[in-house]
Image 1 (cartoon, rainbow, N blue to C red):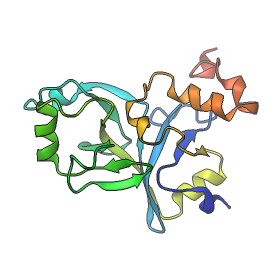
Image 2: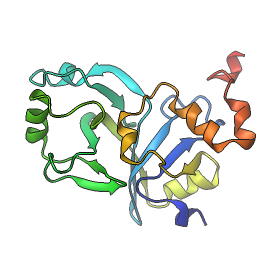
Image 3: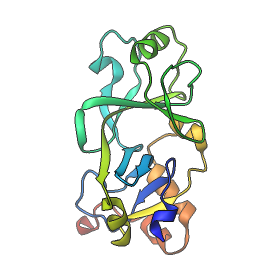
Length: 186
């Protein structure tokens, strides 16, 4: 049963057949919350052209901003692996935490106590209403995979992350590795 496989901290890998969906084509989503009422996740492999300093000039760092998903793209979210430094964080799983005290976070970044391997920022998130994600799973929009990187996923390069996940899945998915992002342009 699909519901038994969906868990906070797992990865949702966009099926290669999601074509024409700019938000989710070749996406990998970290599932940050999953419960009876719905689900929340962050696309972890879609960097934007902004840095944190572009959005918040008082932060003196050049951390990339990622497109977390199509919901509330005017809000900034973050995940990290340093709950001992950032108070009020919520554990997702495997040493990955969501949010926390943003004023403390800004100060820590400006003091150089947080690196790219510790934190990732997102504009927006991906959200599903009750039973919506299960429905998308049944229509083969997503592949579920455990997060073998655990909290080191935060520092992983986004460049080939979807392809790396497809390689890990192996089998019939390997044919998609060298396919163009939009097969209609082939």
